[in-house]
Image 1 (cartoon, helix red, strand yellow):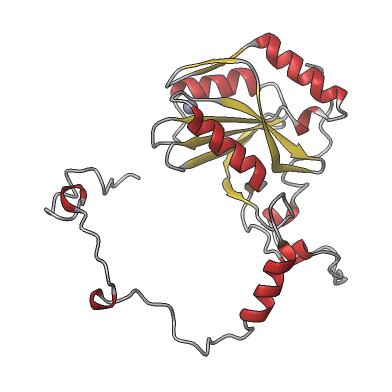
Image 2: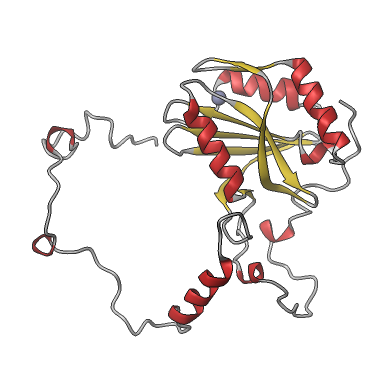
Length: 251
Ligand SMILES: [Zn+2]
């Protein structure tokens, strides 16, 4: 693919993610609903709800890993608005992209007017197991296939929702940073009704440091009409939770 010089460090393009120094003291007037959102405090890979839904669907469609690229928003390189697959051969432990398919995908994206940093820097894949920890193969792939770009992100989503995201810099002295990841529900998306959610928020969430209402509490046993019997699957039933691996000290 043809590399276009990258203009800015991706973190500099999302300054709120790394520091709270406000270089523009003039208060900005809110122009739309998302102005009310709280910006993530740490560098965060964010997904639009449709992108996240698509990734969950693709993860659960088969029993193998699947891999793809995150399509991001211009000027917001850590906000994934879509997920795209390319032709690939997959097993439960590996994903191998077809080189020709990757080239075709890159050509298609350039034809659509996207810059390389908007479609080729966020490598996503799933793990059919419960751990999102990168494998040795993942590390080798990340270094081999994404070691020549200015920066790249490896994102892994495991079967039960565990995630792992790491930003790698290949410019200057180089470096890496583990990112948080989250789904961002504050921008409009199909099926959402931010206006009614906003009305419900304003009607029910009161400002103030101390709540006039008692804190939410767990119900007492005699207040629950139906107690579920977990039986032998309950890891705490026989005191066997240590053997079950339920409490992994390293998790
Ligand atoms: Zn992996």
